[in-house]
Image (cartoon, rainbow, N blue to C red):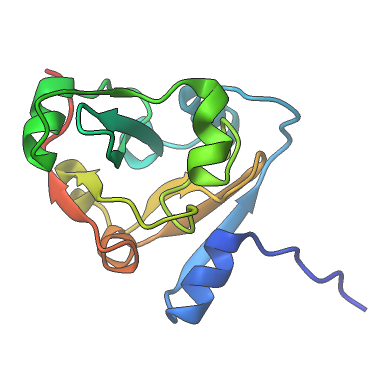
Length: 160
């Protein structure tokens, strides 16, 4: 009998919304950055996305999804979400705010549905790669499906 895959919360949400996706597993026992993961799996940086969780001056949380080799433009991102300024949440707060751990954070299935903005360049691809909700798991899906599932939108977020 085939071993049943342990689905993450992110996968269950995609299933519930009837979103097509693929799962990729890789060896990982501790946090490594997205570029190392892409290198390890032979994946293009521009198609591999990381999830950044920020807090605004107002105390609101915001999620940004950008390519693993890029940096967020905090001023641009703050303006997009209507904040005076935003900053990354402290690593120690990731689990409390999102329900995920560092390196396993995905925009799908956080404790709350926070405003989510996906880097515009994601639309250049039929599929993008995001964290699957735990270390060693990736989800590969259409960026438009991701945006629809998280009520997200696309905008230019990266620092040039």
